[in-house]
Length: 497
Image (cartoon, rainbow, N blue to C red):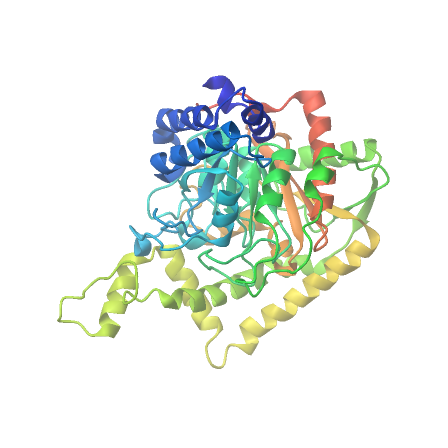
């Protein structure tokens, strides 16, 4: 079992295709790993044991018949509990959807199944993807396998923790303000936010519709690329889906190089609030890129300093609109429907019982920002800042091919440390938010451990829209250089397990 769970997704798929391993063996090994460690980590909200083994048997039957297998056939995956899955629960980490079993699959779920990826179950997350630590889950926090007393990032901490604890070689996350990249950074894994619209949002429970984006999570850049190709592509069921070819991300990951590339470093992505060890590892990464043949270009993007403020007006505004559908009358939790309350009272009682504090906070912020007399002053102004951020990116990408930065200002902080300080919590997404506002593509990958606490540090790579392949080209080159010099810590045992 130990050998199987430490394989990369690419290695696992190759061994299944050759017959060296069966998909059932691989799935059983990962289910056993979940049984062994998830009580401590709490990465999963639901493990679909029977469904996963049935999918694995189907892969083995295909191979026995001589049918061609896809590049990830039989590889297990942990799915963030924000995508609908027919026949098994989708809770979005909230009590308001506790026990809800969707009657249909999200487009992303369908594509995973069509590619014969084995879905092990649904992972823990901040309620409705609102948070930076996975402490806002209605079902309790997830621990970081590097140190179980620390957060695994958010909102997709369950997916990142499942990877870091070797409970799955692949995972799916969603990124509204950094919720794929930030968990990847603090768990030493790889997370990619594709170009907005590159991966279908149909069947993904909405938080902020102009920002939300599903994407791949893995332990290596190549594994993320293989998963990216499976889930990306135009979807007529999603009006925001881009009708354009998927960039050649796997080819880029197999041929990583930065020779002759111009790499931008934005001066706004450092300064007060950044941990010394994070800056040290980032500076080393920039030096490494230069050593590998890249030209380093200093950039000034002044509007980036306003990104956090703009985001926390736009995202709550869209959230207050999207969450209006959870009224206790159509699906999910219903409270107070005993014949003595009006429909309005039932809705109020249901929301009081079903929504957690962070969700209520953001609904209130958004409703206020959209209210009569304040719309132009708050939401309208934030959208103007969003335009300025987009223009700063456009000017930057006239000078460089990609931009690099720390993914997060600090390493994983202790569970509970920022629970009563929303502003401190929001600062965890300081480096990631501008990319969501502009719709660009971005990746986080490990770039070493901070010397102060021996915890992972993430390097963020940002590319222009529809140039996702550049992420993988640069990421693969950096990863190869790091592995050659220092090895890959996550291919070994997570320290706390």
